[in-house]
Length: 629
Image 1 (spheres, rainbow, N blue to C red):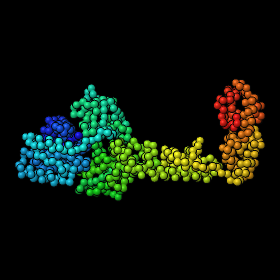
Image 2: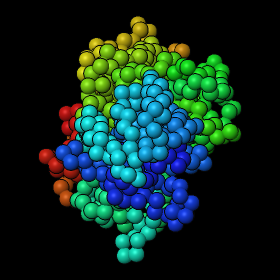
Image 3: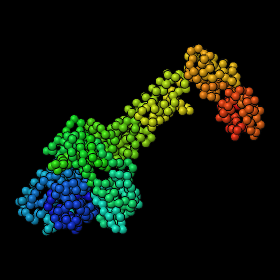
Image 4: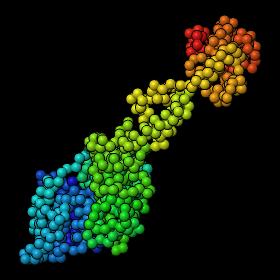
């Protein structure tokens, strides 16, 4: 668990931490020389039965509020420090506002330097503090007068902190690992070391982490928490992570260590945004500083309908100049550029929308199930990978199934991908309409090619494939040899086409071993183009009346069977025969011979060997392409 300090400069935060922990968190020479905290400081605090918690000491100077934000993100409870001799000051109010924006709901207020004021003044300060925290997350926090110099009130402060710790629920370690980096350095013999607070999940030695933004990876060489070597780190722990195979410059403050593949960086977020009371409206062109964890980037906030105003939680899109690593449900803080001040904050509702001109969602504070539906609606036929949901909606992996169940009436899960039901229904309608249109357009064809059926749904081949499989399972369509048709549908020739089929059958059978080509058959018919004739011949082929030997020529099955039998009778097993000898067996002219021989090679009557052919032995895999052979 992490305790973060907050309060105005020179109100005694670092001295109080030292009195509590015995550790001076002002580690930099400049900090010690100037007497103010510039960088984050860390120390373990032992609270008896409440255990040991980590303390993050943050700067109070206005110029270092961005550093304070890096430390305040990820804390479980706050120690708000107010000096008795000065009372509430500007940074006191700003730090308290930041704690509220980050949803810190537990803590203690320490009124320091109590030895410098009398009882009446202390009572006035207590009343002032009570009014300050009213309506905030620290409204019920204990107010404890203390003096780091004399030690007065320190036992009471420890008791109040222990009680606050006991009231804060522990974080669940069964979640995706994430550690925002707040410091990186190099130790001789160890290599690159980064520090941060573990927000979620666990990490062990020898695991591989991803360093975001970017695509770098590194192996965890060692782990420490408050100077002690550990085998694994868990949520709420301050940790130092030694990384192998990475340079210090590749992992600075603002980077994030993760392990799951679902994490990605983005320059666009959906969020619910609220401005603090008294803050100026923010328009779509207003430049802001966006703080999330240890990340601090510039950008803009764009809401539907114009500028954001104080007092309302407004759905918006956040457009950033640099990529950030966010998760659904993350809280962030917005600061203005000039004058520098905290003006608001919000909650990330979709960290990876993927669109340049994305629209804010219509309503604020959607539930996880509602966000699943909205995300699925956004992506349409591309679908939402199930594995991305813990990051996109912010639920633990174990809770995702519950969220999906809540959205079951609006979501269709196909394999490992989620689609909005309307998208699946539309894809189904498109594919069925395309199959029906093909049947109407080509009533003699066996159906529509599977490839064309997939293309009928422009949303994506994966969804089309799944819809076709569902339709086939339901008995609505049939797929066969790469062709899709309506169940029960059969080619139905008209009376004129039936008459032409009979003519073609008679002509080809009458021609015996040297049938006319499709173009010749078209010329001998009435009102038939070559394309019409080919369509009818393919129908006869499917009925088993003829077989296609060349692109433009079909043979009767009787003629093919007779010629196959002539080859098997005339050819001796194992003996190679040239074209002239084979021509004598089948009794056709040279014009017909080569295509026929190639056909018999394909269907398993003969095998080509060098310049000749051998007969294939019975039982050696003869094809059913020659009926009766």
